[in-house]
Length: 249
Ligand code: AMP
Picture 1 (cartoon, rainbow, N blue to C red):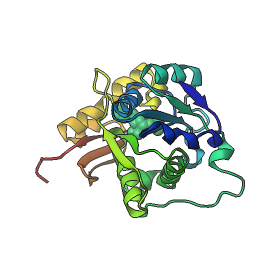
Picture 2 (picture 1 turned 135 degrees about the horizontal axis):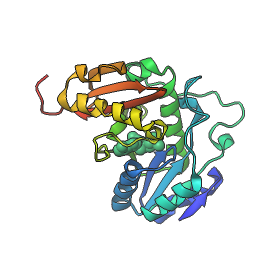
Picture 3 (picture 1 turned 135 degrees about the vertical axis):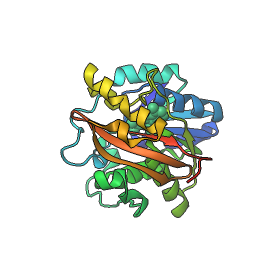
Picture 4 (picture 1 turned 90 degrees about the horizontal axis):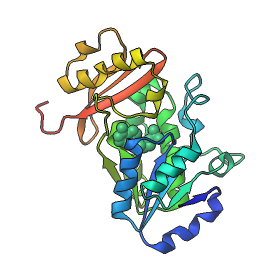
């Protein structure tokens, strides 16, 4: 696996056939690895990007303490079949004088967007930037972040971005908790309390979240329709969802 640290080295990539891109913020777990494997199965060349994007964190969020371990990530990515790990410097993504943003207005302002103002503007902008730098044929996202996948699909359609968006199922731990880099923040007791989130979603029963601070627990028509929720457990904010396709409204 090659580690590429400057955008200037990327243009030659598509000469090697079809390209699959997996955008990430690192701290890899089985959720990320499932995307790498899906990209591996469908493309000649697999690129994973590793960039903790400041623009998608609101002030006061966990940007400074977000888990970072590039060496471990590089090993996991290589083992999962990634060909190129793209680790851009901040100035390749946001050059001096940067002032252009992508806003998916309605979809980006509800649920997560309501509780994390500016989040999806940061997400949509970094993804379009990565698509333009890497020029992938396909890009891979997790259903775990259902609204993010919907925002990206809408941007790609609205702006006619030439990339196919593939969404892969949520990977969970044995106890049902969806894998997330932020699970590392949880103490043993908090992790126990956090299990109420997948349980409430599975049972379609908000009352199981009693005792947790709930940002939302709502159905959303993201194609597929989902029941999505966000809760705070101690200082950690967790999101999850279940697909409702085929269930009566
Ligand atoms: P992140 O590094 O958290 O930005 O996530 C990178 C990609 O991995 C996003 O498309 C996420 O939706 C996806 N992802 C994160 N957690 C999971 C999970 N538990 N199952 C499947 N995909 C996931």
